[in-house]
Amino acid sequence: MFPKKIIPVILCFLSSLVSLGQITNKEVVAKIKTEKILDLITVTSNVESKTQVIKSLKYVMYVYKKNPDNSNVSKNEQSGRIVLNPNENKELSKTTINQNSKDKVTVLLLVYDSEDKLVAKDRLVVLNDDESGEKVIKVENVASEDEFVGFRGIVIEETKTKPGRDFYIEFYSNYRLKGINGSKIVKITEQFSFGRNTIMEIFVDNEIVYRFFVQPTKDFIKKQSDQAIVAVTRKLIALEKQKNQIRQY
Image (cartoon, rainbow, N blue to C red; front, side, top):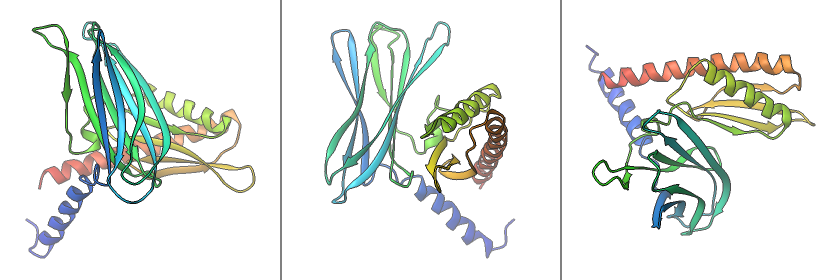
């Protein structure tokens, strides 16, 4: 049992976590829209401003297709940066789905602000109706980013140079090879530093867990990739333990 003085602190901590999980789709709203035309379903991602402030945003739309017969999964990613004016509604990206395909298609839209904080999100699933055999669209509202079932193991890349890109490729290959499959999004960014130097920063759930200055040698990149994998794995394990502890209260 916790002392009485500790209980209010715990309750305050838990309530703050709940509030953090509800900050999306407030000032900026993400929306995935669909339209059926003949044998195709057009999927369009949109973002809308609900404020009088100009917003600098970054978006990523993931499209996952899973074949029900062989469980093969394919992934497509569309991303970009936009400036959203006050009360503006802007189309971000578009993709099409064949209604005759048996694939279950899951579309996830994530929108980040200029500080790389998640500010808006939406998801929908397109799958076959067992009775009619036609495609049906299912919109699924979720409370937090890590509850997007089927979207584990996401790694976002924002590199600027070839060595930075080489590091991402090395890291992502290791990440997949080790089967980490984290529930939180891992983000790899490259920023210009002094002179021609760049610095790599690796984030887990928008928190930096590892950084280093880039050197364009294969051995150096491999060493940094191995160390970054360790840092990311430790953070994912810590977040999972924290989540399990919170659920116990």
